[in-house]
Image (cartoon, rainbow, N blue to C red):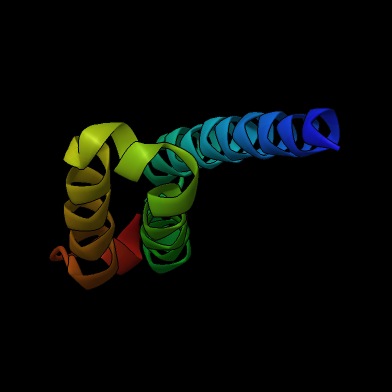
Length: 89
């Protein structure tokens, strides 16, 4: 009985790590797409915010909180940012 509990715990730790890595990859991809397609900044910024918050569960608060905070700041700036003549590009 003790062995099955340890296996479940190990599975949980592995799953948590995989979720954290996937959330980090999605944040990075959304940031790259934000640079490549700035007209969709609200979509990419929202994805950055969502997966930065999701990193609380998966990646030890997004790198001990630093990634979480930077992701939230960057995502909020992307969503709220308005540049002059943005529609002309």
